[in-house]
Length: 88
Image 1 (tube, rainbow, N blue to C red):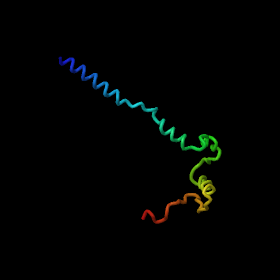
Image 2 (cartoon, rainbow, N blue to C red):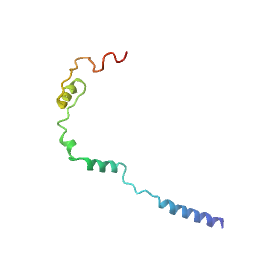
Image 3 (cartoon, helix red, strand yellow):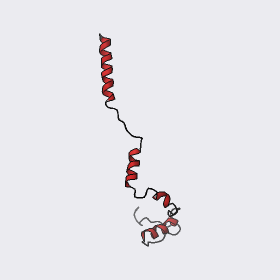
Image 4 (cartoon, one colour):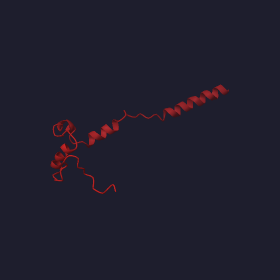
């Protein structure tokens, strides 16, 4: 009798757990779907590869100023953009 109760319990628990199965899409599919829905031009990354300048620091400062249309003080040598007296 005990064997039958255990078998019925296992079967009923299995049926309950089958009802909780999550049929989720691949990992990241939701993010990819949002990206495609929110992008006006899906090929923008590939189309603009030639526009993106490469480099860092002083080389990028000029490109950034042209991009924003703002002229700031230029960095030369080891000058820093940190405010003077900020670490005192």
